[in-house]
Image (cartoon, rainbow over all chains, first blue to last red; front, side, top):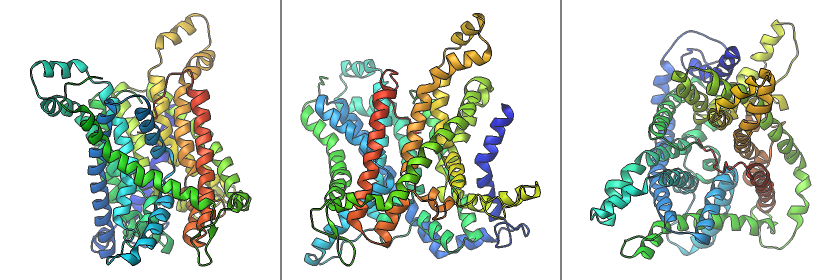
Length: 263
Length: 287
């Protein structure tokens, strides 16, 4: 059994090792080792197209994560205060947002906005078009739903007596929120933020449809794989893999330390 | 819930307003557009022309191959992933040193969140002519082709979704009351029988959660069939990209999207009704 589990880890990490290994290969061919070199890292980080795609992706991921963390938290707090049909309706929307495949979200966003823009653009002095903003909006939809679920799980596990104690001690509602509720929610908000950031940074399919003329890093990687990949891409990939590992481990540690309910 | 807040109604509305706006503009409106377009016609230059016709739905069999591939390979891939993931989850939950548990679990999950494109690209190389088939021919199995076959897509499915399948199974096994196993063996059951009659039934809710999650993502996948199926084994997702970005047949593409969403929702409803029904495990595992 131990051997089986070890083989599974090899299976999971072999392709990642292959990418990282390729980034240190001085030759261009993926399957032929031609000696150790760091040149591709230099080339990748001086390639303006790669740097621009990386910047766009970081910008989209960051704005998305901030907005999702805020809106998701507000939604979870708001849902604590409603019941019945309002709550059931929101629950349904949250689950629909999570379950509709990314490709359908991308397509429907594209055709809805393009149709509206085609109708209103002749009337306007500016030209509205798809772009990074649409990627952010579509990612925020999915991630807000995720953050709302995470924060709500935390709220439901929260000890109500702390809030009552704070109120008994004459804290204002906002004071109670800021000094009692928010610190308790912070780990799940931060974990949601990190997940949202990673999701957005990694997403290809939604961005592929709605990014318009803007190029994110996954779109750039997709088109260079189509043209024939160079170890430059492996170098960027290795840096990205390493950074997302660090983010993920951080998110996990935060969730575990805060005693997340199972699920 | 009663609160001492001064204007609770206004505050509640303010808290929920951003989400209402988001869901309305980014979810409901676009889905409504898809529904309307699905009854329309393709404009001569591509795009949408207003009409009311069921032709797009009646034409769905024209992309039947994509539906058949998706509806066979997604369930098989899900099942295969569950079977391969189970022993890993079992080891992590019951057999491994508790000190390493969390680290090993995070290591299982981590690959899912790192560049999907590059990882599948690596598999193109590993399963291509110079990769695994070349090694197999040294071992005396010449002429085995893996890439661009359903096998490659299944290997990719297991590889890609194992990280999502292991955690929910792990959670259900970890919660399992070890005294039940002791009782079972005290009563003379063989280890195999204890496993089949105690461990496995109690772990099923976790397997079902993981399977649902993997199935949903596999159904809508594009990169996996694109890279490992190489255009020969394609899914509904590949048909959609083709319809919207190449042939620009928006109304037909809208009908295909609706069919995909409909299949998924029926599956999810069946799952909720029959699998979640009595088990009390209603949470969707996301991480």
